[in-house]
Image (cartoon, rainbow, N blue to C red; front, side, top):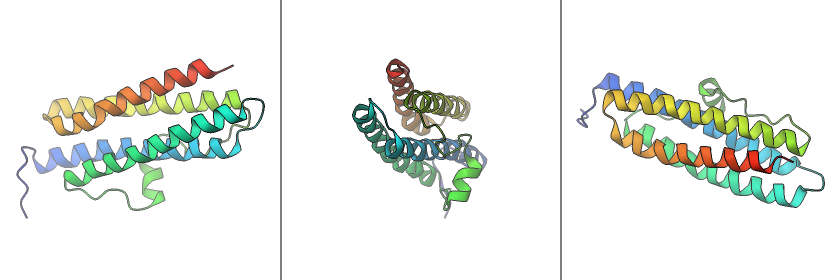
Length: 155
């Protein structure tokens, strides 16, 4: 079936690739945050365990919205962990063992997602894809806010 949503096939594919990068980075950061939730220890365990839970739940919810934008562009969203890893610029594993190192790693992850979103937003502007911009702009705000909160938590 022909799609007439104001974007050419090439524009839709370009935007879907950019949004897939956002999805993959978000998914990797979700997994990393969940790993740190499971493995945080020390005097700040309770506070960080709860903070990481709030954050991974928010990231998980975001993955659905982002993937649905890919589908709205009539492109298939990633169907395997391998496809996600290939599209991500964030390694999903959480190697840090100390609380402050976990926080620093998550700050770096959120900053990486911010950069990925900014690239996608630039493309959205070039292609007149306001719908993608509408999905990604709140994500940008959320990641910048979360990075700030994590930086403020580092002891």
